[in-house]
Image (cartoon, rainbow, N blue to C red; front, top):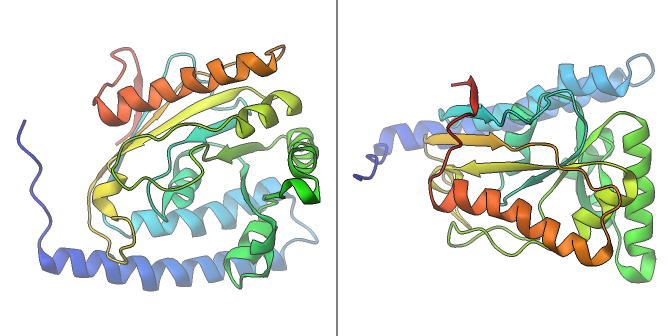
Length: 257
């Protein structure tokens, strides 16, 4: 298989400029509108009208194509914990573009004091991740239950860090414990092509071909603590096959791109 041609310097420069300037401007405007409308718009509308478009603009401004596949067992309206592989700084923005309903993400509790990013996560009702000394999993689960009651999904990156090689790293159990205890299924959200758009530790963005696969909602109810490790590996297998082996389920539905 021949590798796709890399974009030229001019196209890369345009993609980088648009992503940083246009993306940050859109994020600022979207966040301001979401904040200003808090008294009279519910979270679902603020997410759909302002926050998700503002976040997803960064990915679209890379001039990349995005193709989305749905497994036959995936329900676009079904809430759950979306398990996404972690590649670069645009992963959360891509999730805003492709997840078809309201959701929030997880972030370190001290990020609330980071100008811009912390405010956006607060506006989106992000779930604060605390260390064990400050309540740890119990506080995370409490917040996850609240989001489930609000009919929100949750986005999680169980690898805990961005890949450096493009391969899928081991999955930690925390996101799966949270899903089970909050009464939510888990959903494989597999992404390939993002490494070519933005490399680790790079501020350069290149147009690329991004492909996204949504696996089925997988129930977590009744799964034992020992069984969670098996569940995490089952979900990780979807990612390995899609990301590393180039597999796309033949019965999946192309819904975009």
